[in-house]
Image (cartoon, rainbow, N blue to C red; front, side, top):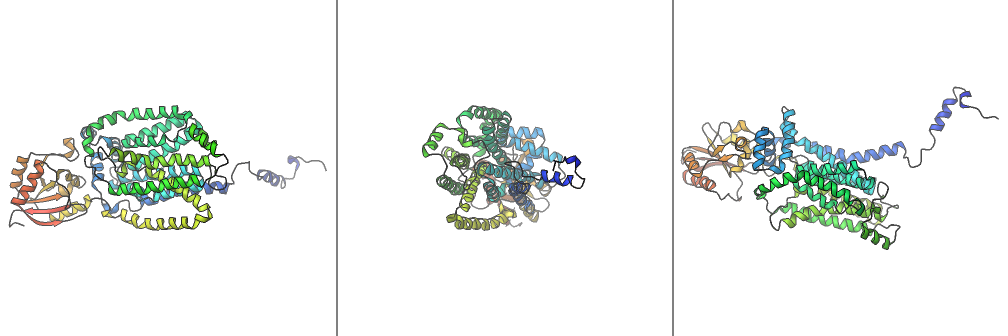
Length: 535
């Protein structure tokens, strides 16, 4: 039988043959569509989890704590007032304040808590997506999924996803800069190196301690890529240098930093777990190359660990080079930035865990990779599942507490309500120490009827965060003219400022007034003082 052309076949038969040919086996290396959709879904899942956690209870019942109050106030100052203020204090956050200033100009009629916090939610979602893709690129699909989920569930990540501060944005920039660094070394693309430099610069402009991530990145770069990396880093450092030099004159701004017990405990525990995960991964992953070849590659800084493809996969086909790259990427990021701050704290306390929030991405990557590897090994599958289940069960309780109004150090909204309960026409208000004037900045209506007897210049006009106060002598005279004073101060046990003005406040109150009533909202004492017999 002679061959028949497709055009000569009956109409009913030709389409069926066409479909048969088109439905043949896919090209080599191409995954079926359902597998591709599954991979996309598993990659997106952690970001969706992060979004849900970020939106859950984002308003915290209208509560706002002192750091967010500063953000709100600075974002609502005019550009001239903002410039004058950061010239004196808080220059390290100037770029973030400018960003929020623009957002409030556009969305001034929207709930201010949402305007402040939604950028942090979006940044955390972006950071989670970046951590997921980084884990997928270095360890495979399951490692990426576990890395993203663990990162999204970490309590510190959840906390700063809902705060009007810059730390979530810094974390997103650092995570994506790390991802681009791996891609740039592999692709040698000038545009990718430029993107890495831009994200590094953006992170440092948002908070200067983001440059510590560069130290962690140095461990990843092979010898043949060091020149390009150095150019990118020097470009970013040159861009942030003016801000750094100017902010060094405001070193008194970090004088409040003491021993961050909670942050230190997290660093020790998470750092220890990260090191153990790294050691376990390296010991339990075999590669086809000899031990001598591994040592030679390690000594030479060879780029072979980057490989030509998207990274090794855990399981039967895992090679030792892929695990080395994952550990070299994650472990320095997980440990070094915090360790540098701790070492610097020998000279002056600088360690605060939120300054290096991005380190959690490295910790999550190591934990996700170890969990993935453990789940594939029969002897460790049970303990790994049990540990993961216990951790996940403990997180909802803490997550619920994070969204409560009393979850932060103080609550300016609750303090304003306490003032409303005590105030009467003709009352005055006194803040001790003076920086507690910050509690009034988001509720000007509540404090409008109270005379601020210590105030010299209002915060926005003074060029300082909390305004300036009159001299000790003037303050004494003003206090002695008052009949009732509402005093806003720290909880019991907090140290008092050793200034003449603060001493006058305490002396006059104790000698010429009596304490009538005290309310204790979260993080404060609101007391009504009156002349003896006039409570």
